[in-house]
Picture 1 (tube, rainbow, N blue to C red):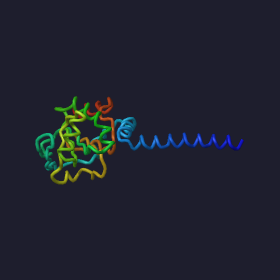
Picture 2: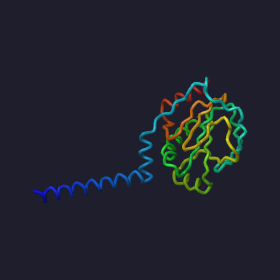
Picture 3: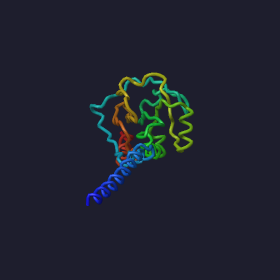
Picture 4: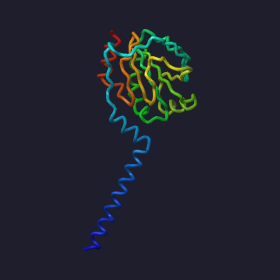
Length: 190
């Protein structure tokens, strides 16, 4: 009897150990992490203008990595989608398909500013592999002082035409959801 119990426990522990190692491996494997993050991403919320932080100084030089250099002041008076991200960041990668779809439909209505510390070679390699097309910049100097500090990425701000920060989202989100699109449409009509 003792021998049967020991054999049964060995099989159980062996199977449990294999499953445990497999789960750990899958969570460390970048594509699996990206997939999981995408599954739990939710639609961000647009807040009311009253009581929102507001940007007054738009003077911020940005070096275009796949587009022309700009000064952020060119976007004053417009709705802005401002995203801080990197090509090596799994939560950033998880939200990019949503962002690309949103960008495809709203470029020309919303100003898109994607800021990274990646170099141009890394960015070009990533864009060639993924097919993304949105404009990416590096910051020459500090960004507007009214923006909260960006201590983690992805970090996205939605800024209305009056300079009010109407969304401040850390982490991955579904930027292409129907509810977010409806909120942006209302923001564009204000």
